[in-house]
Image 1: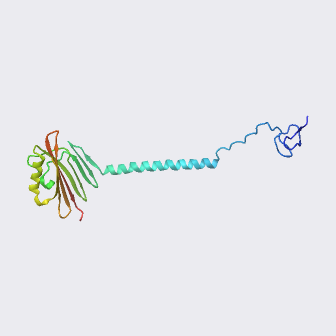
Image 2: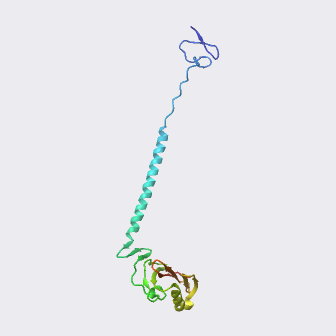
Image 3: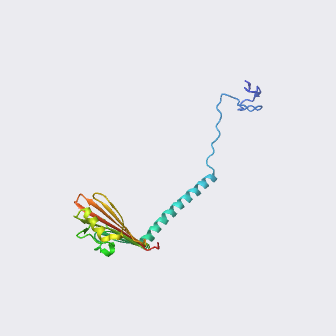
Length: 207
């Protein structure tokens, strides 16, 4: 039985799938054949491989640099943890934290309050640019007694004083601006004692 194109009416050869005249499907109800989906090209795969290699090399470089940097620094850092004191010596300077050796008034730059005992919280740092240190003491005397003592002993060296009921801040700044001392006085209610923290900074730089 002869068949005709549903679009243009041309006669169709038996077994043909498309009209030889207009190209329309011989059976318009048939589902079109899907075109094959192209997979990734060889060129795209090569680019992806190059990117992955570059990222991996970058990670190795960063991790390797960090390890080498830490190894180099560790070779020049000496840590001493004897007793209750930690001392760290580096090419840039030295840091000490914890129980210090007996602190002298020469190191403090100010008198030690009579009868006061050294307490925790001390630290000291030295470098090519100067030295910095905090030393902590405690006494059974009141904060007002401690403040009165330092006002009398330091006299004109005191540049400013800030006082409240149970605390005070005494600041000393030398004229050459190479040294500054701050004495913080506060009350420790847990021990019913007065805490004296002396912070001293000495600069080796020219003002």
